Amino acid sequence: MDAIYARQSVDKKDSVSIETQLTLCGRYAGEGVLIFQDRGFSGKNTNRPDFQRLMELVESGQVQKIIVYRLDRFSRSIADFGQVWDRLEKHGVEFQSVTENFDTSSPMGRAMLNIVLVFAQLERETIAERVRDNYLHRFSLGAWPGGPAPYGFSLTKVTDGMGRQIPSLKADQHAETVRRIFSLYAQEGSSLRSVARSLNAEAVPGPRRGLWDNVTLSRILHSPLYVQATEDVYWWYMAKGLRCEQDATAFDGTYACNVIGKRNRGKGKYRDLKQQEFSLSNHAGFISPEQWLACQSKLDRNVQVAPVTSGKHSWLTGLLKCKGCGYAVKINRDGRSGKFYLVCSGRTNLGACTQSIKVDLRELEENIAQQIRKLLRDCPPAELDLEERGTSQELWRIEERIDRLVNALAESSTVSAAYISTQIDRLHTQREQLASRVQSRSRAEKCRRLDFDAVSMEEKKIVAREFIEKILLADDCADVMWKL
Image 1: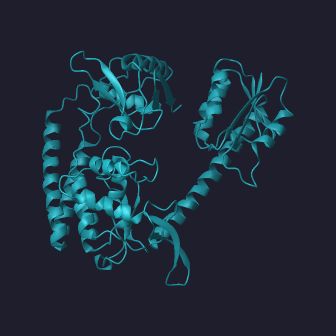
Image 2: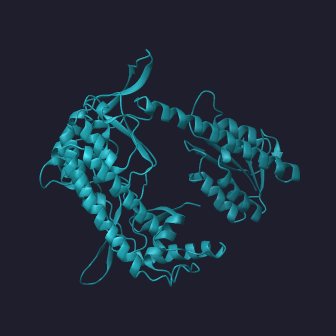
Image 3: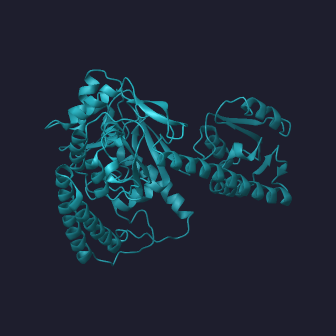
């Protein structure tokens, strides 16, 4: 049976509607055609509901041919389409683009398909590069680089020294809430959770979900967009290892500052600020540098749970999400019976969800493990190096940071000197612990063939995150969102 697939990410005047795509494709389809359409989804990846439903029918052998209006309606990534095309060929499914006039049932059609894919990817990367260059240029000017305004600000424009109107930020009605967040968190004995509970109890609306949680508060408290940037703030970032094109004297407390660059979204995304730089912005901050720095020091003292103890009950920890509210699902263990219970953190921490999760953890693990084993069998044998990456390089980077901090200490003020000294002591401790770990580590298990049943829980976590985006839980049902 033939299938028509249509997609439209944004409904605009100059874009071809899904209805038009279906009409044009219908001219090339046989009787009893299947219709698949994803409205409001980007083609940059394959995480689209009807696309996934179409692929399930392909796997079951119910589709003989897929017809699209244009190739980019189906996929805009060479890597994604390459994987999908392998699946289509495996099941003998033909592919036709009606406007680009090629059909993979012929050798010429397959050749044209590869050519179109290459140029589509080139065009996308060229556009992305222009957007990135424009973003960096605005940042260098102190302008707002782009995107929605952060919480507490609205977008505006200011005139630069050459008389040009450039993007900027100005405090809005939520700025008072931001001031209160910094004030509450700076108090002795307060925590992210206590601040979140206080704001939720008073029904203060959050920026995204409407409720406040630790992640939302942490983003705001870490942001330099609110601070009246002085030399103390400058030396605080220099001690972190960031780059800055401006001199310390430019940080006089008149304007806020901004940070740009790659950011690790895993552990330590705010602590490890390598490959980033900061610069003065063209908008005024409204949080004093003393209060902002006090909050940064307190945030840095928050202890992260070590990987060896994090998620000790299951290798699915971190992937489990509540389908009702989107918050993480915790794994609790009954001390008497030893039974595990799955609980929505939005319900227990914030009182923001009524979802009761009845999924059996071990049954869920076994079902997912079966799928992963099947996926691994289709992959060539691989070696999994689980030793900490680049231990010697990490030691060298710690030494480099210590030297940089010592140099910064000589030019810092009293406020930032205390912070820098603390960081030097912490780095010395890290260096000693790392060196001790290097000496005691056995290398007998450095490399091995990947056998999912034989590897440790930490190894299973790594493998699971390679294949799974998230697992949505509700009542006794679990929806696994695969990355494939």
